[in-house]
Amino acid sequence: MAKCDICGKGVTFGIQLSHSHRRSNRAWKPNVKRVKALVDGTPRRVYVCTRCLRSNKVTRAV
Image (cartoon, rainbow, N blue to C red; front, side, top):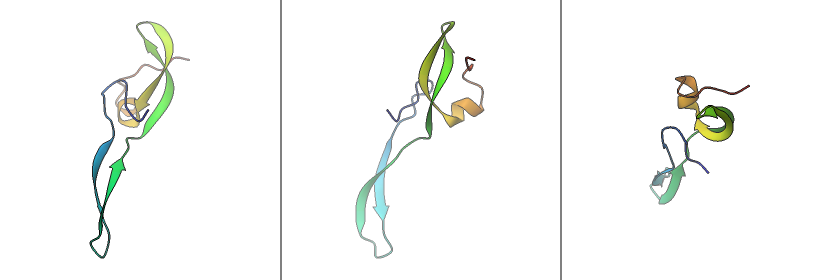
């Protein structure tokens, strides 16, 4: 679910490093919102990251 339908931004994996340098796996999830947008002229609910919303890559349906 944590994937943008517009730009394809998804989960990024890496290593969390504590103060004592114990390493553990972790995931960075994008800030994805479920919005009603126009897709091919019809309103549909899609998952869109906030970067795409802010840069007007999505036309919101009312």
